Amino acid sequence: MNEHELDTPCVTVDMAVLEANIRRMAGLVGATGARLRPHIKTHKTPEIAHMQLRNGSAGLTVAKLGEAEVMADAGFDDIFIANELVGPTKLRRLVGLSRRISVRSCVDSIAGASMLSEAAVAHELMFEVLLDINTGLDRTGVAPKEARGFARSISALPGIRLVGVFSYAGYRPATPSPEERERWARREAETAVRVADELRRDGVHVSEISVAGTATAPFAATVPGVTEVRPGTYVFNDIGYARLGLCDPSQCALTIKTTVVSRPSRDRAVIDAGSKVLALDKRVVCGREPGYGFIKQWPAARIEALWEEHGVIRVTADGPGPGVGDVLDVIPNHVCPTVNLADRWYGIKAGVVDGEFTILGRGKSR
Image 1 (cartoon, rainbow, N blue to C red):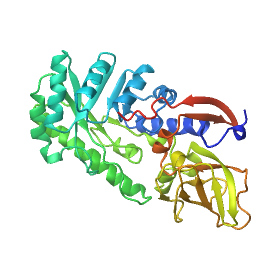
Image 2: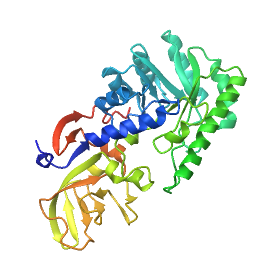
Image 3: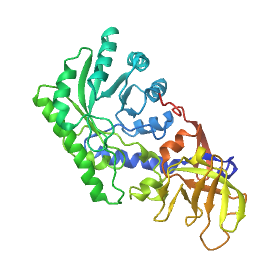
Image 4: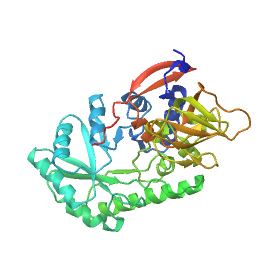
């Protein structure tokens, strides 16, 4: 069918832009010698993960054990869970997954490492783990100066093997400066490399140094010693990344199709996509007041408010603005939670619906 025949609200993906985004990142990282291990938390779709592997990715990164199980069911056998796995239920699931595929996770506490050790010994397994270090995000991770002592302690535990160093510093500066992104990326990567070198001098064999996300991966991959980077959002991009200068809106593959259902006043239009579709990340859009997404057909208009099932557009441009029945394309501010709110997306090629894809990793937050 023609894309304009789709019922709204719905998620659509420009397949040509998606494929170009995948090739671009693969080329940038491939030229450095580091490996690309993309994070599937953004798309949660096995078909896209297969596209990434066909373009040279070494394996997959996931955020949750549930996502790893989905990808294992889809035939992927080399997965890094970029999270701490704690508690008997998680460990039982990890044991089951470890009997099927090659899987690694990360640790940042003796308590968590001890739980992994006990489960591994009980089931006669060896769990490979990466040491999670805090390089600036202040979320999980041990402080770099404490890494050596921590590594010595967990290396003594049976059933687990420390094979690398893991870091995610994100990107905090709100400036669209490639120079600042490069500084941020190098600071994270160089810290991780330094910690790994210290561990090696202590006799701890670490072979993997895994760092960086979409904003910083192309820079971090050039730092000597880095073995892999884990970008995720790049497959779709979003307005948050466009604001940082990482992409142009034309490189945003995913849009929300939504219909104008009301024009209660000259300066206000109401669409059928609310917070259950667009999510609640409010951002500065293209230099103007914060809004809830970028409307491709009306770039001067602003989605100023969301209810669960409705979005309110403030029409500020000259002219009548969108009318009742008009279908609009909205690029979300933050694509990751937007995808997680949907159960499927439609691939578009040259204005025609080319396929319907189930987001099998949706809601896999455990």
